[in-house]
Length: 244
Image (tube, rainbow, N blue to C red):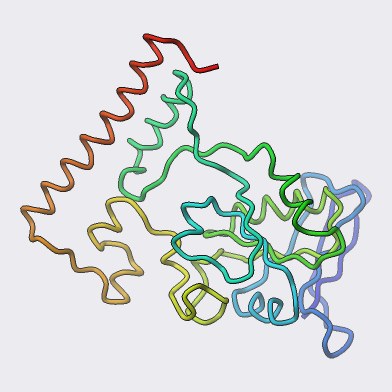
C-alpha cells in the first residue's frame, strides 16, 4: 500500500491511500509539499506496516525522551527527543512541574515537558533530506507532530506510527531486547513499581515484593521525597532568585 499526495489550493498537504504501482515499492510514502500548512493531513501506518518499512530500508526516527528510550530502545533508530523534561527552577516552571506531578504524574512517572530547542538541527545532522523516514514515539502523538515538522523542513518521504509503540505487539518492531512487548517503554512511576500497569498484568509481571506493609511504606516515602524535592527547589528560588 502506498500513499498518493496532493496539495490543496490553500497549500495544505493531504495524503490518500492508493495501490502500490509495482512490487517492491514502499507501502507508505508521504511526499512533503513545498509549502505545508498547519492543516495538512498525514496518513498513519500500522505497526505491521512499520515493520515492513524498516525491512525495506527506511530510517527510524525515535522522538521519545531519553528516559523512555532507555526502557525500550529501537534497534538502529536515530534518537532525537522532540520534547525534554523541564529542569528550570524559576517559580513558573516549578508550578508547572508540581501541577503535572499532582495531576497523576506521580502515578505514571510523568513530568512537565518542554520543546527541544535544538531538535531541528539534531535531525538534519543525522538524516539527509532524501531519506525515507519512519517517525515513532510511545503513543503516536509526538511522532505526528514531528512528521509534520519534518515535512516543513523539506523531508520528502515520511511515515508515522499510528498509536505509537503502545499499539505494537512483540516482534513487530526491532526492539532491544528482541521480542519484548513495546508497551514496556511507556510504563514508569508508582504504577510500574506496584505492577499495576496493563502490560505487566498481561505478561505476569504484576506481583510486588515485600507485602502490603512494605508497599505502603514505600509509597509514603516516595511521595514525601518527591514533594520535598520540589519544595526545596522552590524555596531556593525564593531565597536566591531564579538561575540565570
